[in-house]
Image (cartoon, rainbow, N blue to C red; front, side, top):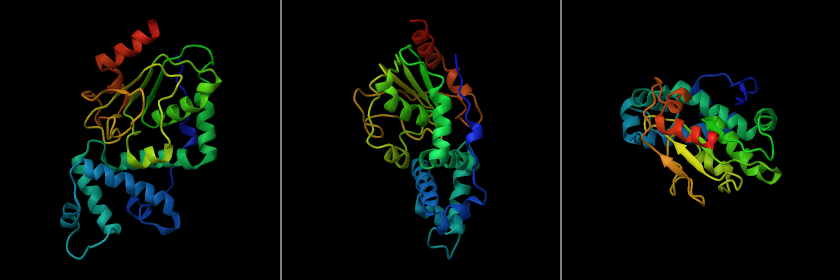
Length: 237
């Protein structure tokens, strides 16, 4: 088994989250953070009226105070908290927009797969974005994947899916199995016909109950009996 490590390629920017997200000098990054956070808020049932009530009188537009109010609501509504979600979103943004970061990460993952040799690929969190992109690219170079497993995957988030368009089922992946914990704020949507429409469709398991405190850790997903069984069966034939 191979576990590519690419943490050294990721360095998050500094600054208060509520300032970064409205900073005009870094508009693309701010827009991406804003879009994902607002989608998480909608999924959690948080509306503009809730944010306005939390922010207090006199706050009528998405400024620093408005977003700090949103973050307080999200901290109460999610297990992970806004700090962890923000780090994840920023990592995804760096991977999708910074060619140097992307090349460094892709090289680590690419080196773990031998073309022509059947390989079960498991992608967690940002790893599902990385492996999905590589599977779509490398199929023509002889990758053979009897089972592709994604857990805690954000691929169904609008802002992320749109940056990966046009989306497709990787031709070298015979089966794609996706597992989510409904409490996982990163795996916001199942990869279904609404949020990730591909053919053949992805098989989704949406009732995982992870044992990790934030509902997102890979250990919690891999200890789910069905997830573990799918991977074991694919590895043993």
